[in-house]
Structures are given as structure tokens and as C-alpha cells.
Amino acid sequence: MLLSDLSGKEIINLHDGAKLGLVGDADLDISLNGSVEAIILTSRGGVSGFWSSRGDREREMLVIPWQTIKKIGSEVIIIDLHNKSEKIR
Image (tube, rainbow, N blue to C red; front, side):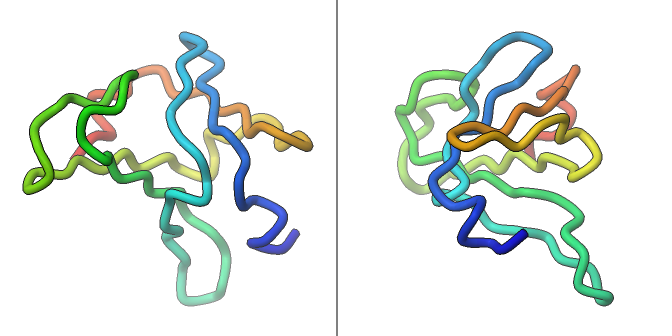
């Protein structure tokens, strides 16, 4: 799978049905051997969902471990992240 295959897909949490963001708005955590460890989403301030409206200076990151990905479809990526608050940095 290429990174371009992930680009633009919406990330949906299977646990609570929340829309977490788009892969185009994300960074990847890649290990030394080249495997993807996690998708990292950053807030844009004021976006609904789990993001809080703290302004442009304070940004939160949601780290989505690759192991939580359950299905990659043509338009969405389904993850199973039970406790989002532990992954927000």
C-alpha cells in the first residue's frame, strides 16, 4: 500500500463512531525498518469532535497506533480506539 492510497481517507473510530480527521491532515510515525507505527493527527483549533477550541497556538495531537486499524476501505479507515484521551498529547 502506498501513502497516496491513504491520503484523503476519513478516520472513523469503531468504538464510538467519531470522525477523527483525514489522513491528508496527518503525519506518520515510521520505524527505522520502514513500517508504519502510527498515524498522528493534529488539531486545527475549533474543529468539532474530540478537538477542543484552544486557539491556534496550542495544538493537540492524536496518536493512532497502526495496530488499532481494523479496515481500510475506499473512502474511510476504521480504527478501534477505546480511550482517546490517553492518546491525546
